Amino acid sequence: MKKLKDKKIRIVKLQQAKDEDGFYINELIPIHNGTLWAYYRQLSGKEFYVSKAVQHDEECLFVINYRDDITTDMEVEFKGKYYDITRIDNF
Image (cartoon, rainbow, N blue to C red; front, top):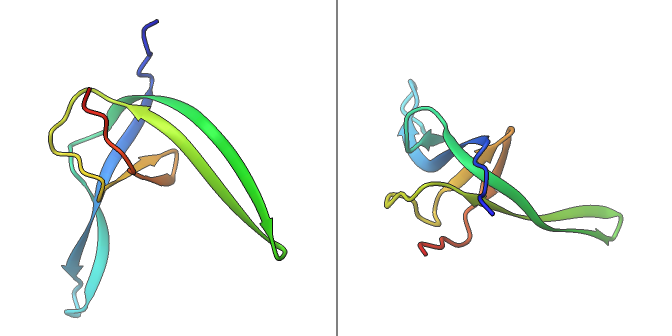
């Protein structure tokens, strides 16, 4: 079964830069031009109710074409949300 890459994502990295006043600020900079096409699948969803606070743990899978410039220090932006890259499967 072929995985359809029909979702647009951006891969961003955190970079420090100086603002106009000389203060350091953190910016999320895309590592590529435009957007990447990706296959997206939800792996599991868990909700924890801890002391009246709701924590949402979400795991999902993004599949893109091979790139050698992606590390686990980067994040995936998809539909306005940011997902940490926890593992890269090069197989």
